Image (cartoon, rainbow, N blue to C red; front, side):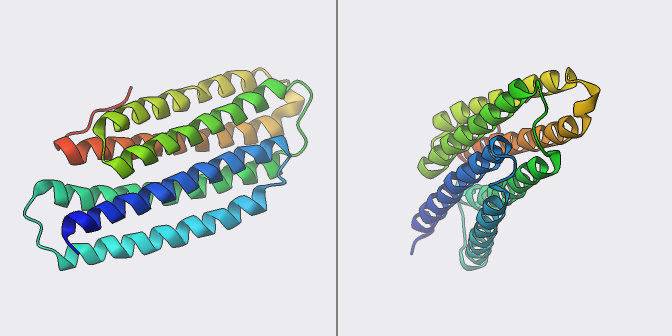
Length: 213
């Protein structure tokens, strides 16, 4: 197998894992609607993410040792794939924490419907951004990657709405509010990972990263 063909396979598999992580994120925020009922499913799904990422990292490491890569884009592709795989694995861990926070939060307090809605909607937006990033990764398309990075950055910034709503909740909702804020922070970090993945596609093509706002 030529390096170019192998790199195409690595990108395809990386994109498939990113799509699966988008499902895990969706599942994690759904736990906030069902008061933690999906937390165990999220943990099981994250174990699959870990296994798939571990296998991909081993393939990437093997490629480093087998090939002589005279072209800078090939070298950048392997480096970017390694960074992206680590970011995806960490995103799975963040999704687990989001779901676990819903268990610790307990029953939703009166007046928290808007906060829950913003948290869940924001999580779904971040999952969509991972899907867009996966397509850009699979196709090695920097134009798609730039759009995906901007989409992920916007989803990340929308978590500010969650913070604003939660801070306005009454003091008796403090336990739930604290867990919601921590879950929102995890979603922000997940969105930042989606930005990172998209920017790596751009870096492979041009040797420079275009920072999303």
